[in-house]
Image (cartoon, one colour):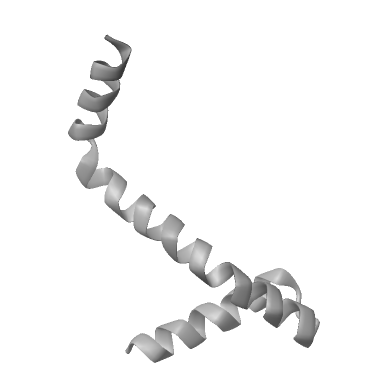
Length: 61
């Protein structure tokens, strides 16, 4: 019964979950680049995240 309710809930909110799943996948893939950037440039983590996100956005566009 609990599994059926869980499946029904996920099916109901599937359109809302898509951006969260995509965001989780992107953060998982970008994490090693952020770690390397913060280690070698001695930027704080927030700065490394900004640099990597800008670089990835620049490559995409």
